[in-house]
Amino acid sequence: MKFSKLLGSETEAVRWMESRARGLVLWHRVAPQDAYALVEAAVAEHDPAILAEIGQVWTLRPEAGGSGLPAVLYLTHWLDRDHLVVEDGATGSAVLPLVTLHSYQLDYWQLEHP
Image (cartoon, rainbow, N blue to C red; front, side):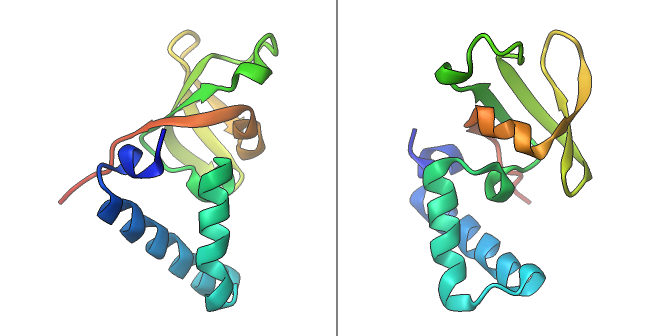
C-alpha cells in the first residue's frame, strides 16, 4: 500500500514526512540535508522507529507467521520512547517493545484533523 493512501493524499504524506524530518533535526540533531532522506528510507522499510504513531493498525508480516505474535495490533499510546501500549483484539491491552513492530507492517492510519 502506498504511504500517501495511508495518510489520505500525497500532500498529507509530504506534510507528515517533512514534520517527521524536522523532528529528527530538532530532537536527534540529524543534519537537515539527511533528515528527509532518513524519513523516506524509513517509510519504504516500514520502520516503526519513524512511523509508529498512536491510532495506527499494524498487521503481522507473512514471514513472521507462526511466531506466536497477534495478527493485528492497534497502537493506543506511548508508555515511553521504547514501549507502546497496544490492543490486539484478543487479549486486550499489552505493553509492546517498539522493536517488536519490525515483525509487522503498517496497515491503516487515521490522522486526526482539527
